[in-house]
Image (cartoon, rainbow, N blue to C red; front, side):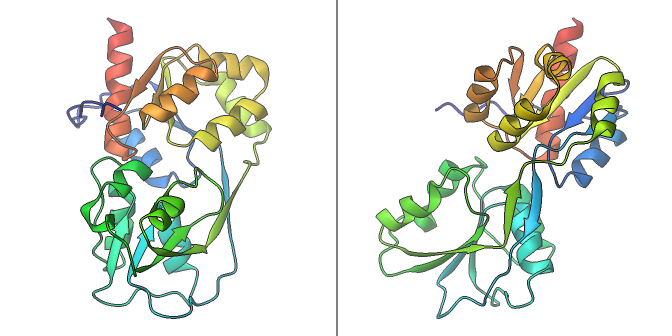
Length: 258
């Protein structure tokens, strides 16, 4: 699968000035703030709701830790006192955002340039796993690619579910804000489950409005899902990092204006 070309970073010149940026992440404070700094009207339309799960201390020794999202870091290290990553532990992150979240806790992690399960599994440190015990920190569900692949490589994988994903609690406030949002408008998407939830929850006129405008996705897999969901104007960012999503959104709107 080809990796999308990395676009130049958005400069500080308010590249998205006057545009509406629809953010579908549930944990979106940093992304919303970044969009507003670039002059956009940032609109939160979460496609997921996250809820903490009770967690017990993992038994036995752990050879390496894998964190699957920034939310996994937050729920594991901010809200779960019984979980702690030992100093000098071997830690992997699914992408740069997760690595940055771990760094804020003083934990150094290895992350792939391609921020998805395939990128993570291609890391040299996750090749031959025979005799190794790994803690996989995240949520139940999702693509379920990491654990089976690592088990096939010989690892003993211990899933640690620190939160769960639920459909969003969208209200009339969300719908009204989207209805009156000004053009040009672009949607940012980094989860297939969020896309499915929004397609199911949005009133038909609002869904039609989003489908008629650009959508920025964080992977080729999500581009295919967006196309199947009726979106036609799809741009693929280099990663799910805010700077890459916003750089691609800026480019998509600039191309539309020309």
